[in-house]
Image (cartoon, rainbow, N blue to C red):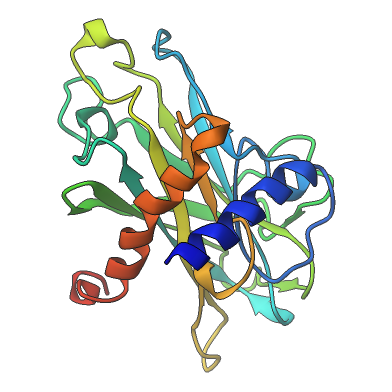
Amino acid sequence: MKKTLLFFSVLLALSVGVASAQVTTPGLYLGWDHCVGDGGVLNKTFACTATTDGNTMVLSWVPTQSVPLFSSAEVWVDISFRSGVLPAWWGNACAGRINSWLSCNVSRPGGAINCADSWTENAMSGIADYRQNLPWASQLDAAGALPMGDEKLVDAGREYFLLNIRFSNAKARVVDGCLGCLIPACIDFSRLQYYQPDPEPVVTVFGSQHATRHLISWQYPSDSQTNCLQAAEPVRNTTWGAVKSLYR
């Protein structure tokens, strides 16, 4: 585990220095506000004093091989919390945030240069599930899809935008009584399944399969990324192991 943490610590440090550059290593990528190749940042800090607007995680990927008829994608994102419990602000426990704080879309971030689009203007998206899967962690399941006949060619070795996952700032202030906005979290784009029309098989890609930046953090100072990785490690190991039956 120590070797894994050291590897990802080096990877995360390097990723900050290569922002706004083409990404070509196959695998899954995660950044704040932009694709990684367009400068998506590693850590987001927020004073939790505003209750308007929100925060956007941008999911992207680089295919290992070309996908001639890319039609849809389902993603899983694991969120682990330094507090050791699932904060109320990151769930459906607070009035004013219930079933309204979390959303997704397939609108490629504005100004994208190094991040191609996986979708056409007719694409659809939605949150399929959001659940607490461990006492200190939750998992989000979202998807995007193209109408039949709109399938796209996705080339190998190029970064493609997948989804924006956005959560609102409603009830962010401590005085609002919905605690948790200030609690550090580690966010892992852990798995992607992509589809082509039958009879092509469903293909699964795991974030841990490749040396890519599929981890970002919330409210972590730059010198504490190892703590973020330590928080995420048991989530990654448990999600696809001991509690595999919880998922599809």
